[in-house]
Amino acid sequence: MKVFEKPQALTDAVLHYCPGCTHGIIHRLVAEALDELGVTGRAIGVAPVGCSVFAYNYFNCDMVQAAHGRAPAVATGVKRSDANNIVFTYQGDGDLAAIGTAETVHAAARGENITVIFVNNAIYGMTGGQMAPTTLPGQVTQTSPYGRDVSKVGYPVKVCEMLSEVDGAAYLERVAVNNVKNVKAAKAAIKKAFQNQIEGKGFSLIEVLSTCPTNWGKTPIDALKWLDENMLPYYPLGVYKDKTQNAE
Amino acid sequence: MAKVTFDESLCKGCGLCTSVCPKKIVVLKDELNAKGYHPAGITDQSACIGCAFCATMCPDCVITVEK
Image (cartoon, rainbow over all chains, first blue to last red; front, side, top):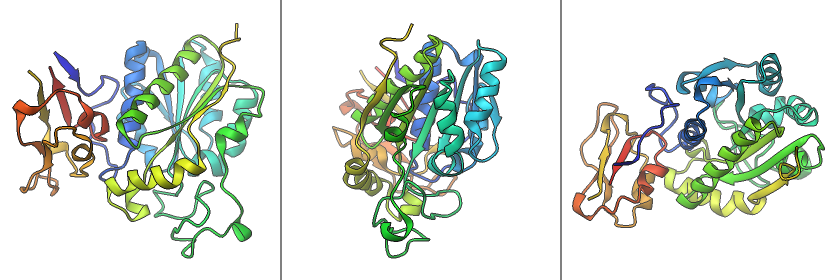
């Protein structure tokens, strides 16, 4: 009996991500959730701009690719055109927390019944490792060679904390994929976010803390350790909002 | 008995699977695959307990686990 194999909701395309990039794990968790809930056939994903732009080649469902940061707005249109669609966006921190902040906040405020997968690796990956809105204080990047100086460039944006004050958001959780236990918890959170949509409970966002070994300048295994030691204290894991218990 | 198989052509040699194996039987091989990476493999199939930790951490769906 197979206890672990590639989910049906992923295509046979070879992932283009760097060795050890945890995007691959998160793609698989989304695909497993779609398979287990039996909604792959009516799922429509919205790919972002960034490393994960080619998500449209990797998921075995219909996909749209949105302009930079506009995935929640495109997802709104796709969902409203036919509420039977299961619509998700897959966005990085440069997409969702920088150029797409307005679309994210307003999609949440409107309480759109969509699922947002937000991958936070604290750096711009595709463009070569520049400082992102989510870069940690003191973190060295291409554009902050002496470490992020908060007196000059301000503080990181904590998306889950920010959206927890938005009344329209239904479910917000932050998870990580740096060890087996956290990957299993991330899977449960992503599945719940899709379940919420199926039950019409509204806007769900799962923030997944991820690694970028290439631009962090670390080996894949050291990158997991760096995430554990540096990102988890600044971005605590947990459920930031859960309105789904009381929803009709 | 547990059986774990690696699709070496997909492996990028990141080694995340080697870091989580409780039996320490998943290692990177000395030879190269077609991509030019050292692919992951298993040293002692009979010692595998089928926990699938390696597959859980694999970003590239290289690993299939049977029990």
